[in-house]
Image (cartoon, rainbow, N blue to C red; front, side, top):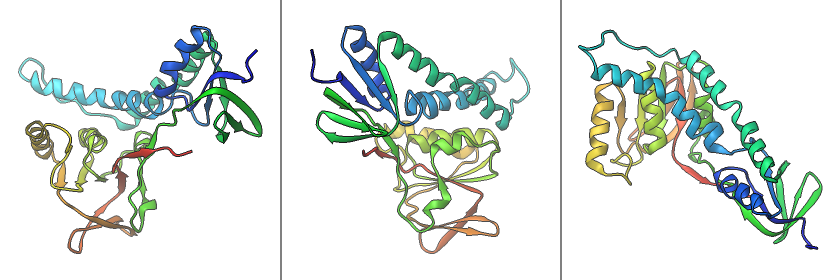
Length: 265
């Protein structure tokens, strides 16, 4: 008889966990998964699936543009209805993922896990042991370390907006920034992207990136290269983004899309 409660215990229930936990349990291993938030982690609940759902009407808009002459009229996006639809799509996912894991024999433990030693984790005062513990806690949004950073929001908050702000400032120009800038612009917001350097999507093929930026600029997205954002300040007109050489721009809502960092335990 094993001296441990589990053969494998996962801390976190995202793709790094459920892609392995299910097959392991199905093969006869005793497997546990600890999760303090929603089963499935970021991607199904407030990442990939949610973003794809919000982006689908934008794809439809672009298709209609390309088919003008064959089809007529423009497509507008009802933001509040879109967010409600997104929620309806993702709401069942944690339950479905959890059920699939349980059917293979995985034990799901809800709560915040804390290491006691290399083979032991405590959750809500109860200790669980495992021969092997997999840290699958994923990443969380990075927050720019500037005065007023509490006025900025992350991608999860953007996807939960019931009403689309008129003026949105996005800090950073990675893929999260560019995706949400595209979606917000297509839904009717005035979008400004405050870039860290003079290139967006620096890890991607730049000729393609320049073509994407040119299209977004034509559609009304404003890019501010090497913005050097220094502070956010609440004002009577909204939120002032202070950047560059004593420059300032007023927006109604700020998305901090400056990257994601490891979720430390």
